Image 1: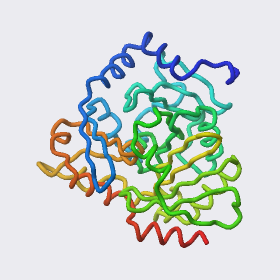
Image 2 (image 1 turned 135 degrees about the horizontal axis):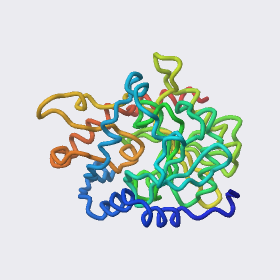
Image 3 (image 1 turned 30 degrees about the vertical axis):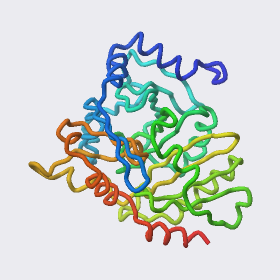
Amino acid sequence: MDESNEISLSELLRQQMESWSLVKTNFGALDKVRTKDFEMGGLRISVQFNPARIVSSAAKVDAESIKNRKCFLCPANLPDEQIRLPFHKDYLVLVNPYPIFREHFTVPALRHEPQSILERIGDFVDLARRYDGYTIIYNGPCCGASAPDHAHFQIVTYGQMPLDTDVLSKGKPINIEGFPGGKVNVLTDYLRNGFVLKSESREESIGLFKKIYSVLPALEDETTESPINLFGYYLSGEWVLVVIPRRRHRPWQYAAVGKERFVSSPGAADIGGLFVTVREEDFNKIDAKLLEDIYRQVCFNDREIEDMAAGLS
């Protein structure tokens, strides 16, 4: 199918809500999800109680579990009801049947290959350009991806995460030699610290991302990429990429027992400030103190981000 002639994302969602009962039920349930908001030192975090998302939050992503299950993103395993739009020649655009956002789509690669952003960053920025007006997200392995064995992105409603608009005015600018048209802000004092990259050039956006990626901490397992959550936008003729490095997959409370247990596997939505809880007891329990504790466990502090930024000069 010619991408220029394909249906819009909103039309795709409308068609799937008419033809697929699971989509109709789960997107309809978003009208009834309970939420509560927190103001934390000038930062806004919205907490959502969304029990359907336990499929993702409690997913087993260890190598043995992945080996023993069918990949739910491979084309051969997709539900018959799922409409498939092409993107480039290597991806499909699908409605996510377990949504967090009012519009929520998954963009899996056609081939079964692990999540890895470096060789796909060009596809990521192209996706942002193709679907301007939306937020494009990438969850790295051990950063919220429930299918780390299959490369994929997501397309979601812009502005539902506080980060979408926060980063346009936050951060300290730094200069990076070799990128005269690009702008880089170091994002600190934000609990989910990182880097904000802006450029009107596709190639410069890709180059800036690779430069930032080069200073991120490596994992002990050298076959696995540096853990990040990545957000992308195309706004007023400019690409904006937000890179949030991760230090940890899940907080210690995930594996706790009894009253200390809290089921949280933070992905891009949670890092973006739309924090998802899948159990009612967790939604009732969560407060600003617990939110701050979880963010500080899974993200880097101000000094650590500044040290990474120092390596860019």
